[in-house]
Length: 279
Ligand SMILES: [Zn+2]
Image (tube, rainbow, N blue to C red; front, side, top):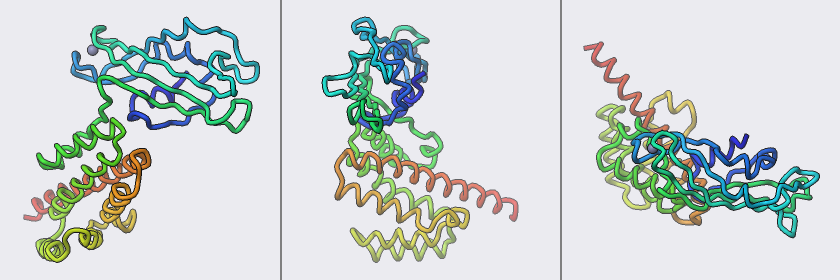
């Protein structure tokens, strides 16, 4: 069954490509009909199973390509695999709401070349794809930070990579150091603030480099510079990448930002707990 397609439907923002196993194409397009995937339903107000309804399966011939087993109708004159369909996907719980989406699956070379690769991407979705907001991260952020995070995820869902990165960068600037200050000593916090006052604007990079030296040992053992890495990734993406290029960086950035915030928060919790015991 086409499992990677399910992943694309559930987790991928628009236009982000996923490479498929060629075996999945043997099921095209009939295997897509009634393919179930999870998605938020506004009527049910929870995530429910939705199932694709493929109309195309009735409209094309069942003749198969002898070597690959793909349907001949999905191979163009130059030998490229090319599939595009617009689907309705009703919610299986309320049987009322549905989402619409379009999917494109294509080969990068003629399928007669054994090294050809197959990619899938969503070219449209309504209601818009909304990346799941991590509830634990939301708890760590301030009210303002939660708004920024929500906007970043909306932009990510619509493949506006640069825009998403700008909001993520604001979270780094406005939230990460605040959370860090909860787990360092008062003296360290004062030094950090002094360095923040000395370095503004582009020089701010130095603040994050210094912040790395203050992170708890549990995080430091993983790598040298998680906080300034957040600054570096976002700088490169905002200043010198296209939306498409920065989309890939956005996934790294979201993963690292979530990790840093959650680790600092966990340190903060255990620090408070130990302080309570030692009282
Ligand atoms: Zn529903």
